[in-house]
Length: 97
Image (cartoon, rainbow, N blue to C red; front, side):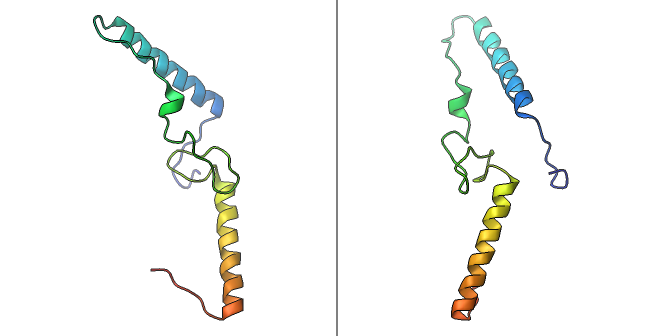
């Protein structure tokens, strides 16, 4: 992850940060007089809600179809083995444009 320039945060710290941000927003909204206050639901607004990993069916990372690096590796290994099997059977390797 460090090689990719990604910063890792533990799930507990991430949840704590989200709760702090939610509290800040709620304070700002409560200070505004004459405006309609709405309850913020961060779990429903996340782009990953309802999406599942294509390998293990767990919750996915943001902007991804995988839950983690392990599932990415598993998927690539499965794809390579399927391509190798197809090449052995047909004798042709297909190139995708």
